[in-house]
Image (cartoon, rainbow, N blue to C red):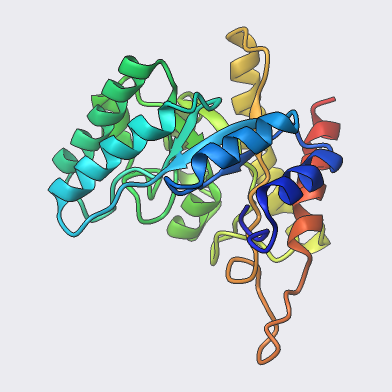
Amino acid sequence: MWGMESLSYPEAAKRVKAAGYDGMEIAAGRDKRQEAVTVMRDNGLSVILMAFGGGKTFAEHKQTFRDDLLHIASFKPLFINSHTGRDYFTFEQNGELIQVALEVQKQTGIRILHETHRGRFTYSAPGIQHYLLKFPDLRLTADYSHWVNVAESYLDDQADNVTRAIDRSDHIHCRVGHPEGPQVNDPRAPEWKDALEKHARWWDQIRERQQKAGANTVTVTCEFGPAGYLPTLPYTQQPVASQWDVNVFMKDFLKKRWA
């Protein structure tokens, strides 16, 4: 629904379905989750739900996180994509949250993946390595556009870190980042050809690993964001590209690449 907040769930579902998507990934509040799941399934769409946590103290954050995961899992989404922890929490605190997710996953049978995202425990490629060692069952949503931004590079000098993350990544957010931002202004533009290809090769590796493991599907969320993530012209705030068109391009780009 990011960028489609003006639409109702039924309107969004119909638009998404008509564009050839198979489902939606939705950050729905507690009071909206039932409606979101019902509408998506009524329209023949798979649904992924998102979790965040929050609170003034770590104890509050941990309890909110657990409650949120349990509530989301009760709707039986395809899986939960979690924005887990904070970059300023200690290793031990973030580890407690990862453990909570593992416990909820075991209790409910719903997979919980942790998105690689700025501001979370997964904020950088090197920063996540100790967690991968400590928690062998930790699984990721790959949004490496954030890592490119944090590192101010395309991560060529830390290929081993990326490879270890690829081995744990089960879902893809196909946004293209660059060294000075988490989202290029338009991946169709020739000046971003190399950036698009760099990210696509990472996604290729995730898909190939899943294929070798016998997976029947690979899930990808086209997540180019609206104004704010999408650059705008000064004063008028006019976006320099169409968010909807860019996301449809990314869907078609990967379907053609993987045909």
